[in-house]
Length: 522
Image (cartoon, rainbow, N blue to C red; front, side):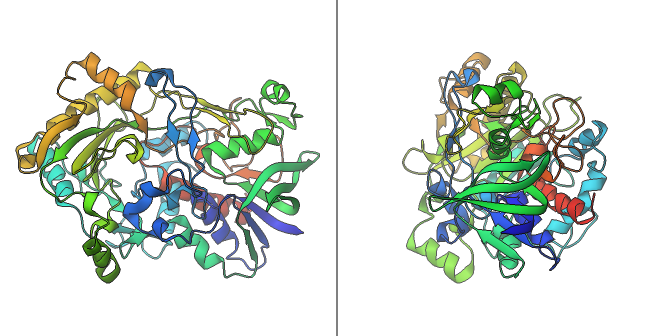
């Protein structure tokens, strides 16, 4: 079977690409997704997302041993389901600082400055607050205020103000400060890329969407991507393409697929017996991620999300679209500059009215609250490598967490600020004993050691098929893979540098822009 376009991966960017391409009835589109449909109720109930980790909806990756984390391997969930990671994430609506995108443009990526990409952010969204210079209505992704924020989250914002930090009501207009996060939810339920983009597109006759179909290879006729090979129900299939293949498999799987198909560092491919189609040394390099450490306290009142699954809360969700189950867990937070000369804040805070330690797997019993200072001005850079030529083998993922001493210093400062906020007078009626880092951890050296032992990903890997024109670039500013034709990459892997905020909506923006580039023949 032949198609005009084949899109690999139904994640945040892929859903946007598929939706926009199929708006033209003349485009015959095939979507291949390694995971299944997003039919499980737990996907759509916001507070349930940690329960999706290490399930069939998650690739459940693990990093290599991280020297910066005292040799620990770090769990790295990635969505394996319609919607990709937008179906298992914390739904925080962020874009990052304008200087992030202007920096991309300054590297020679024409059309990727903030003013260039803002229309695509706006096209993607339905802002419940209404339209403004930076927001729009009518788009597929619903952006809402939390319907029922926890009193602890509201107290955290008040506590930040008590400590002299600024407040902001819109992190996408004024990033510095603290406040409640907006979320990609509608009527208290998750509005993933699948809900917003893919579900409406599935009814179109020109779209064939195949779940549980893992693509194993891109096939080339000369230097043109002519077909893709995939496994479905244990059988191998090939689908031909007349125009373009768009790889939207994410920052881990996109470079893996390119390398398995012969596009990547020649010596690395040869070591695994893979014939080189195009020697691109940057494939799999430039991996950047955000990471955070938990500052956690016992709570003396039964108001935390430990009680979210009670009959009362289930009824609140089903009858009113409110209650604890509408929580995205990371309800509040903020951004601060550590270096006053930094172009944008390097430190982000996520606050959860519950325990959130080791992705939830390390939570103690009872009521707790967690503030997670996180590094978003990442300096450490890692890589994705093949472990073997077997497409079903997970790649070697090395984010090099805290490999750069400057990153560790930001986390240490963040822990001190989080403690300061959590020990505000406003929290006195709620706060019990400090659980982490613990009262014995006080000096910068002790906090640094704590950070190495407890820091975890914020789930934002990017950069492994970076956009640019330098020798390590994988795609050009039209997202076309260098040296071949008929092949683009559209997902977080194309970011030359990581944005300083949650990466889901930037990924959707990339999908929107890619579709526009394809449709306009760029």
